[in-house]
Image (cartoon, rainbow over all chains, first blue to last red; front, side, top):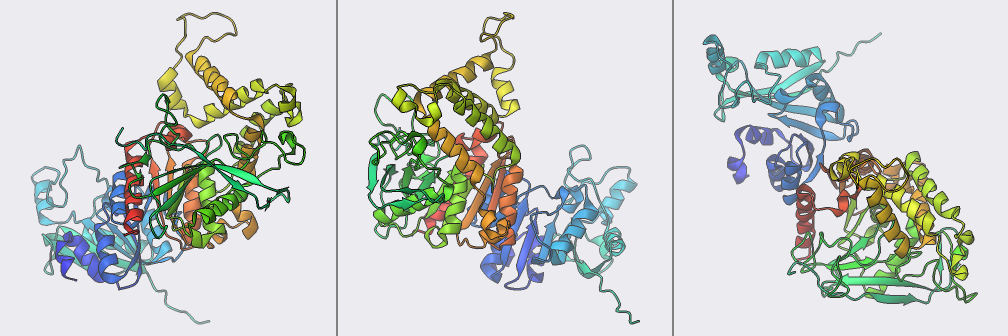
Length: 205
Length: 376
C-alpha cells in the first residue's frame, strides 16, 4: 500500500478505514482517485457517482464504474443495503438536502464516511471574530463565489447524526493532513466521520 | 481526411439457411448488406458491431465514391483515431433484415411469388436482427464481439445482444435508448404509420406492383419523426420564427423556415426510404420489451448479461429521455452488472447521439480506449 502517500490527505484516511474486498459507493467521486486506489490496493468493488461529466470521463479513463447523477434527489439508482461503505468526501457542505443524503447513505450502505471542512477550526472563528467570512485551506472560496452553503462544526455534525438516529463509529479531525487529538473542534480544519444506524436496545415484552 | 476510413464498398452476404422469426414466420433465405472497416485481428477479438436506428443502414463511416457529399451516418465516431478507432477495431455495419438498403426486405423479391414481398414481408423483432447478426458473426468467425454499440433502436439491439448471447459480447454501449417505448413513443409511431397506411398510393403495402410510392405518407411520417428527434430549444435556436420572405403571407404555403426545413427533410426521405420498412422498424421499436420474458423485471432480464455496459443519454432528448436510460442503469445495478452512465448536456435532442458534443466524444473515447486495451 505504498501509494497511499499520493492520495489527498482526507482520502488517505478514508482509504485506511475501508476493509479489503468490500463494496464501496463513492459519492462526489470527482476524478476517481480514491476508488482507483481502493480497487488497485484493496480489491474493492466500487462505483462512483458524480454530477460533473468531466469527472465521469476521468473515471472512465481509469476504468472505474461511474454513474453521472445529481445526488440532491437521493440515490434512486441503488438498492437498499447494496454497499458496505458509502463515502461522501468534501461534498456535503455544498449540498441542499443534507439530511436526505445522510439517510440515503445508510439506506444503500451499512456504514457512511463523510469528510467536511470544520467550521469550528480556530482560524475560521478568528476571521469571523474579525468580522470576515473565513477563507482557509479547507474553505478556499470567498463568500460570493463559494459553492458551499451548509457549513458545520464537528460538534454540529454529530448532533445531526444523533437527531437522524445515527451514531458516530469513528472520527478523525485533521489539519494539513495530520490527525489532531487535542481540542479537535478548535484545532482541526477537516473532519472525517464514520457513522452507522444507531443500534436500538432490544426490549423484551 | 486522415481520420476517415475513406472509400468503402458494401458487400452482400447471402444466407441460404432459413430463419424462423419471432412471429413464427419463416424466411427461406435472406441477404444482409454489410460494410466493414479496419482489420480483424488474428484471434478475431477486435470486432465491434454497430447497430443502426430506425432509418439507418450499413453505411456507418467513410464514402462510397469520391463525389459523395456526406459520409456514413456515424462517421464522426468511427475512423482512424476516432473514438471507435479503426486502427484498433474491426468495425461492422449491417443493414437490418427488413431494411431497404440492400438487405432482404419488403421491396425484395419473394422467391415464392417472383414479386416483391410487399405486405407479405413478416414483422421482424429486435431479437430477430440479433439472430441474423449472430449468424453473420459466425460466418466471419467472430466468436465474441469486443463491443456491440448502438443508439436509439440500435441501443435496444445492443441490450438484446447482451441478454440473448451473453457469451458473445464483452461490452454493450447503449446510447440514447430505452428499455421499452413509452405510451407516448408508441403513439408517435402510430401516427407515423397511419400517415403511410392511409396514403392512397400505399395499396396495402403492395405499391411496388402499381409502380407508385406512398410518398406523402412517408413524408409526413418523417416530418413528425424529425420534430421528435430535435429539441424545442435546438430547433428554436436554429430556425426561431424566421420567415422566408420576412412578411406574413396569410396562406398555407411555406412561410416559416422550420416548415421549409421539415418539408425538405420529408421529401428527401420519401425519395430514398421504403414505406414498408418504416412500418416494420417502428413496429420493432413498439414490441421491444426484454423484461416481458422475465416477469416484467428488467433487472431479471439484465441478470442474463455478462457484458460490461456504458449507457449514455442526452439532457434534451425527450423521445428517449435520460429517465429511460436511468431505468436501464438501475436494472443493471440491481442485477449487479458492471455499468457506467453519462448524462450528456446537449441541445440536440434525440439526434445528439449522432453529433459531436465534446463530453460525449470524450466519454466514448475513454471507454473504448479501455476496450482496446483489453485486446493487448
